[in-house]
Length: 72
Image (spheres, rainbow, N blue to C red):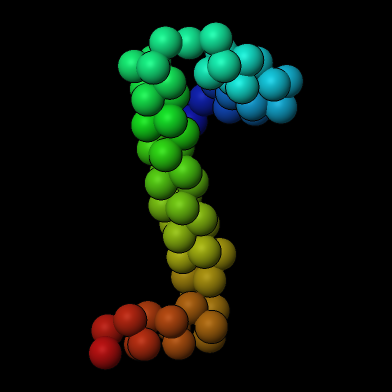
């Protein structure tokens, strides 16, 4: 499920400025697609952050504190 090559290519695409260039020279409907994609990417990144936090703190006292607060 995890694809390191895809992440590397996406990172390079974002860093290189090609995405901004594609956006600049695209028609309006394509611009909306690009913005929707970036919004979805940010949503997925937030979810990844939440999952990583749970994994890191799963068996720690801090993790238990978070779980007890979340259940209230």
